[in-house]
Length: 93
Image (cartoon, rainbow, N blue to C red; front, side):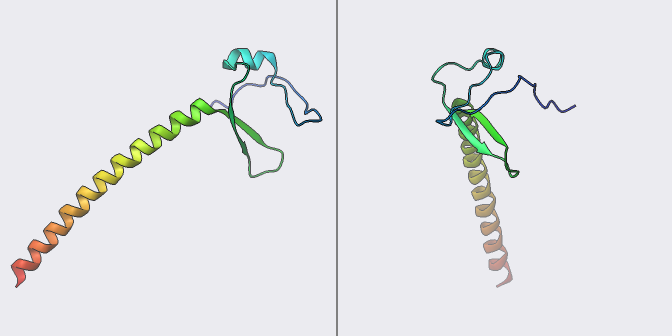
């Protein structure tokens, strides 16, 4: 079953573009004053997603570490394939 989150209430945007996150949401989600967020806009106008910067940093680290492992594995496979192809060419000469 997919969890789509929880409804915490409504808020409004002030003149300077500031939006207050409801106190229940801040408490339950562990948001602290001064917390940094990455802001995403959805493909439909009117959608905004806030993600804690520390979560995005963790995700980026996992992604890049996985990417490095994948690149290493791909290089090993390509090197092995190249060596096998060279061996086959030598055999056919």
